[in-house]
Image (tube, rainbow, N blue to C red; front, side):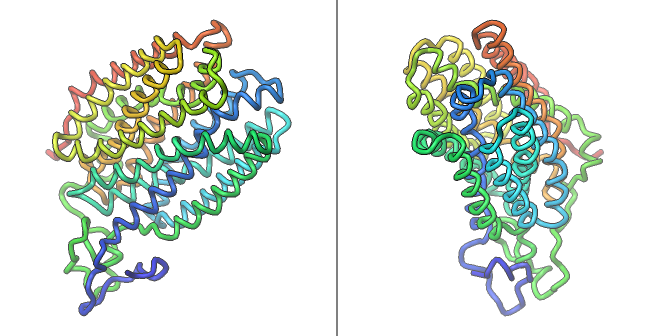
Length: 425
């Protein structure tokens, strides 16, 4: 197999393609990047209780910098998507690793709320923006026939991270305090993400291949033919903006993502309110992560067989039901059951997003398109935890926040019935 540092060259006439399609290496590396990045991101709910007890900051106050974080990293997805199209994912993700790691380390050094805003809401957010969009846009470029499977494997890394990191964070906090725990997590994230970024190449044409590993006869022996081949199914961002499907996709994912971070941030404090011990409460996030791993891993292959839109509708319905489950939870077992439904559905919905964009608009400008849509639809998710935090501060309950989550997912489901793949006139 070609060394990733030199594999940007095109295969010559006499060379054979690697026995293992390098696209699966890209999938594995992107899986690892998302595993670490999202694993660290979703430990915040575990840290919140300890930070509040140490500093006196309320849940609403702590939700605000996290909301800023979600807003900025979502908005910057447009920039990182364009940069990935232009410069490739390796540079973009490596720079993101440095920023994310530095931001997490500085969170442990914050002694004033404004410092927490700066470390989490700005620095870590800039770094996190180089994870989801560059990884998924790159995998879309490498696959067409097996796109659903490849995206599912890639996206499942984030869910496995959500399963693995909360108990790890709880153990670290118990061992050395929340400040040193952030130092360890930030340093690990920086090194690990930067290392795996070295393996992620922009597209198969740079190795003389086509998507799914087919030999690229047009590129073989031609050192200058390294750009993805265009087709009638390729849409630029400006062309995509002129379609109904583009804005319907944004509306659907805006509604479901608006509330998706509410359980991630508030489910541990909610479990504490139910009288559940700290470690078992933290395991609620791990339940979400483990179920999300299954949802992400299954959504793509299922959608390859029965269709993306039908699969999306099923998972949106399950997500609505999970919020109803949170509303009805009164003890550990029912909370874990609701968390499992949420993880399964959230994982499935999120993994279908880049696959749908690739199906609808092609792969040539997919970084810019996914980035723009993620910025537009993902940035409102910043307000979900903030709204839920203030709902709790004013009412002493998360019930209204959970009911809002159920309603918005049902509304998104309704829009799926109007969604069709765009065609040129």
